[in-house]
Amino acid sequence: MPWFLLGLAIVTEVIGTLALKTSNGFTVWLPSIIVVLGYGLSFWFLSLSLKALQVGVAYAIWAGIGTALIA
Image (tube, rainbow, N blue to C red):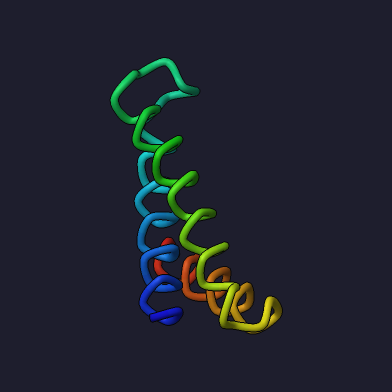
């Protein structure tokens, strides 16, 4: 289950990051809401996964895969 939660954290972070470009400096409402929800859910799922995973491992995977998917 913690790996599934980490996967959800990665997916929601990528969704939030992709919406960030279209939010145009938070002047367009729908993408701005998606950014806030995406990052909020990402940190929430990450924190839930940390109950069973080590912080260093979870953060490295979360940051690395998220960056790779955005690139």
